[in-house]
Length: 440
Image (cartoon, rainbow, N blue to C red; front, side):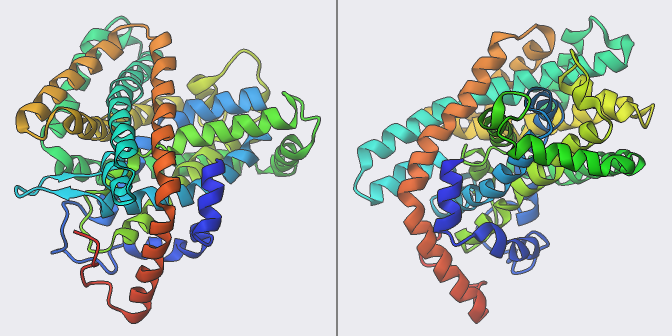
């Protein structure tokens, strides 16, 4: 969060002034179909959003509100707003330092900008250490939080709504592994084609249902916003005091939108563009969608329905109860939405983990295939077993990814600011379609 605040000031509040341009880029304006890369701006955005919008937005927010009270919502929104600037910096660098092979395959993300960006600054040794550490953590996080956690939780919530699935975790895992396998065997293009269709549909269903619940309980608007305001800014906030509420809100947002973790830079590095900052603009929309829109709507549903004060119920079940209190059949829809959220997170994280793996073990087809087989095996394991400590461990791996990444972002932020200034000049002059001197 401190890093996100630093980048917000260093980039001149890019999270505000760049938002309109980000929407234009995602809609295809200024795009060049012949630019180097494999996927469109919108496909890269969908892939990265599909990895972040998921169980954290449904279960994680419920946990945050249960522990921190309504006030955690305010700090969650602020953290999402600041995180937009971190995403801008890391996604710009992801494209700038990517490597495009003769066969068209693209290798990018923190491993590359940590190694080659820091080498350019004459700190080659540190760059190699940080890049290697990031790659190891990224592979670990892809097997844990990006895979086993997703398959486990999607099975749990599906079995809770569809009793026929109880006790069939292994077979559920096999079916899910087949579905995931069909998509990931085709690489980033097929992942992008699936996510660009699945993500908007599931997000729209969730957002519309949340607005219906809030609309039906609109009479509680005064009490709800007063609970958020008092809970966030009142130093004697009920659940753990001012600092406790602030930390819980920040923590939930940081884990949900992954700003500063570096994962999204891997997806965005495959975008068709001549200008690295263009992808930074598109990337800054992710924390807005993930945290400011989806997480906030979940929080408002819980607060407007009064479910945030129900004792002994938390996580996805609390969110399902809140929706169910207004739309009796919605927990079934939510179960399917959670499944789709989990499925899309898994296919995106498989790509992130694979790029960490190829950085460590070689950029060959054999190396990629070995990773995909191991990844699919973990899908089955995740759905079949009770995870417990594995989940805590995988959460820690995602958090640990941000350490080497943020060090690199601090060091390279001046370079990004210069690239941004040059990009804005091009935008004003109308010459964005021309290749950037430093972009490949």
